[in-house]
Image (cartoon, rainbow, N blue to C red; front, side, top):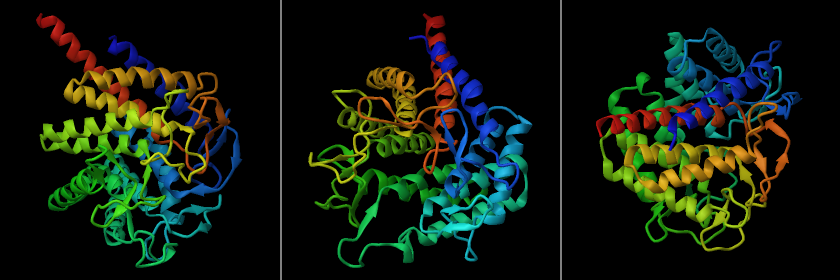
Length: 397
C-alpha cells in the first residue's frame, strides 16, 4: 500500500482546502469569536455562537501551531477566539454557557458540560502556544469544575426525575479520557494518573458489554443493562472515537493488551454499524435490533467517519492488524466519495442513508472547525509513520 500517497491526500486536504475555508469565512472581525453556521460556499447563515464550537476552533488552531507549524496567523486566530470566550463565555460561577448571541450575550444556560470540556482543552493548548498565564488558569479552574460536576453534569438543568431510572452516559468519561492527556502539562501528575485510571476503568469495564463486545451509550451506575430506549442505544461513532483515545492511554502505559482490546471493540462497532446496503456508518442503533428513538438514526455523519479513519490507522500502526488496514481503505473510499467537497473546501456534514448530501452546510450548531482538521492532521501523520516503517522493512530485506 502506498502510505505516502494517502498521507499527501490528507495533508493537502487539510492545508489547501479545509483550513483556508475556516480562516476566510469564520472569524467575526467586528464582535470577536467565530461564525460556525456556514453554507456550502462559506456564507454565514446564522450568527449565534456555540461555546463548544468556539472552543474547539481555538483548540484546533492552537494545536496546529504547537504541533505542525509556528504559523502566526494560526496563533492569532486562536487568540481571537479565546479573548471572545474569556470575555463572554462563563457565568458568575465559572460554568460555560451553551450559546451566545453574535455580540456575546448569553442565549442558552450552561446546561451542557461539554462546553466546559472543550474550553479546558482550548485554553490549555493556547497556553502552550502563547505562554499567557491567564489561559492556563482558565483551563485548570474549568477542569476542576468539571470534576466537581461529573457525577451530576446537568445539575439543575436535568430533565430526568430523580430516583427512578438513574443512568450514566458514556460521553463524559469518554471525553475525560482524552481531555486529561490534552491538559497534563497544566496538572499535577497524580491527578493525571488518577483520571486516567478512572477513565480506562469506566470506558473499558463499566460501559463495555462483554456479551456483544460493544460499548453502550447509557448504563446504570453499576454498569448493568437498562432495557429502555436509552439503555439499548449504540452510537458507533462514539465507540470508534473513544477507542483511539484508549489506544493513546494504553500506549502511554505500554499496555499492549489494552490496545488490542480497544482494536477489537472498534472492529466490532464498525461491523455492527456499517450499512450493508448503502455503505457508511449508521448514526444510531438499538442493541436489540429495535427501532431507535432517534429519527436521524440512519444518517451518515462527517465526524463518525473522520474518527473511524483515525481509529483504524492508529489500530494498524499499533498492532499491525490487517483488519484495521482493510477498514481504513473502505472508510477512505466512502468518505472521499461522499463527504469531501473539493470544489468549495471542507466536508459536508450530513448525508442521508444513500450517501447523498442531506444538508448543504459546512458548519452549523454542531459542526465546526474540529473533527475534520484534527482527523486530517492525525491521519497524515500516522500514514507518514507507516510509510517510514514500510521503507525501513524494505531496506532491511
